[in-house]
Length: 71
Image (cartoon, rainbow, N blue to C red; front, side, top):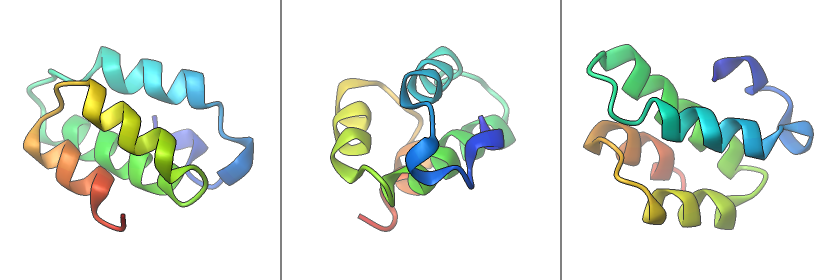
């Protein structure tokens, strides 16, 4: 998830959202934190896509808080 952090507009959004969705229910704190971190970084490029993704998925409170922190 984190390997695309610095890619900005070159981020593969489909891959990012697929990985976040796949691991959304993961019990590990650091995985949930990474989901939010990756989404927050992509929100600088496409905030509407991140808002839509967060609204359409059941994410942990930590992932949601991190993803929406700067929005």
